[in-house]
Amino acid sequence: MKVPHSVALAAAFIVAAITMTSTQAQEVVRLGNLKFAHYGAISYIKEIAPQCGIKVEEHIFAKGPDVMQAILAGELDVGATASEGAITARANGAPIFLVAGFAKGGARLVARPDAKIKSVADLKGKKVGVTRGGIQEVLLAAELAQNGLSMSDKPGKDVLVVYLAFADLNQALLGKDLDAIMQSEPQSSQAINKGYGVEVLKPYDTPIGAPVRTLVMTEKFYNEKRPVAEKFMRCFVQATKTFIDNKALAEKYVRETIFKGQITSQDFNDAIANSPYSYDVTPEHIQITTDVMVKYGVGKMATPALAKDWVKTDLLNEAKKSLNVK
Image (cartoon, rainbow, N blue to C red; front, side, top):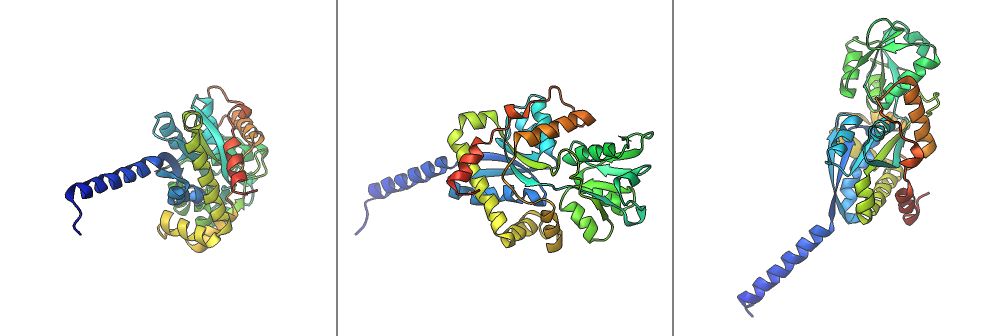
């Protein structure tokens, strides 16, 4: 039987309306992220977002402060960064809450094999590369101070610091333009595995301990889009649990999707051994990190904020409880 044209047209309108409603139901969350192995679970959120009833648009930045600038410009709802980037941004008036910690560690002091650097004390008189404003700079300052060494990017101090982007540090070490680098993952593992770097230490013996990588949310998103924020946090917990439980999937996604085959299986495994995925963060850890930054003058902060005033883990706790995650 032939369907009347008017009926067919009405049916088409209904399908279109349902499709439009479904699309509108999946609200968009704008996510800022960095290209590191331990940021992989954050990237994976966008893959499972439809299951969570949301759509996630991921934007990749070169360094944490760039994520914070995008948040200040109103371009992001959520951002992933090392703790120092979040702390500096909040201290300078960024309307953000710190809502989770997604990885721990992720730093390593790596030296040229021929530089004869066996300890932090051996850095005296050497050129050390680090990314300005990264947690690695905070850890470098703390490690040098613990060993009675001063640092500056101008000659005259014990250690000459050279500020470079994460992507350029390994090349400078390989080219022997630097004696050592305080680097992130997987780049530090790559330098070691390719033979042009040796580990001096993992810098976790400062008051900070193993630094936590942090997930921040704008106050507006947290306060005014609570149902969407709740969905996003459940998605974050699901993505992280997936990466913790399914190491093969995590490796495949990071190596193939994020790094397009540029890192080896050993690079990935060594990197994650030094920067395991996690969920949690505490006001105490953020307060200690803030205090160390103030002590060594890392990060230009107008008014350092008290961690207890802006570390908000209620959404995380609710998400973990709803998904039976400890």
